[in-house]
Length: 195
Image (cartoon, rainbow, N blue to C red; front, top):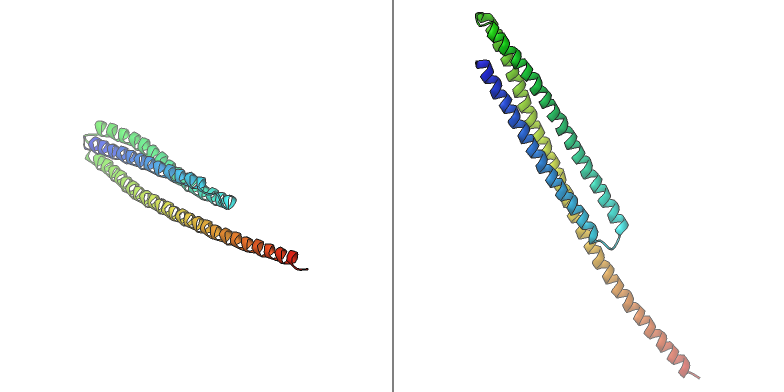
């Protein structure tokens, strides 16, 4: 009975961890989709240096996709491992229950089954440490995405600064052309009026 209770508690804990991992994956999917939407919005406002900016955006999009693929691949592998471990441990627990039912009179056998449960407890602690390392890895991915957002903001500021510089240069060019036209008109007037 004790083995069955511990096994049920362990199975419930595994299911909760799988649900939590699934919820975290959905949150990251939403966040990455938001970042991809931001990347596509920045493309609409760029009229100068469109080819250069498009290449940079494609590169950033490629990096985001690589990060997403990496996180998804690792999370999928870990979920598969957890599910396989859960099935494996479920069969082990069923075998332990049968052994306890047929060998109640043997105290030594019960002690051996308790040792097996200690091994399962070690597996659980290893799974918990693995889940913690997964969380740290996901936080590193989130930090990378934040750096990408900062880089995009810098690019937007640089594009705006370049547009202002182009406008100032264009205004100066028009002013110089007007001055040249005035000088050419004055030269023509002087040429016509001189005998």
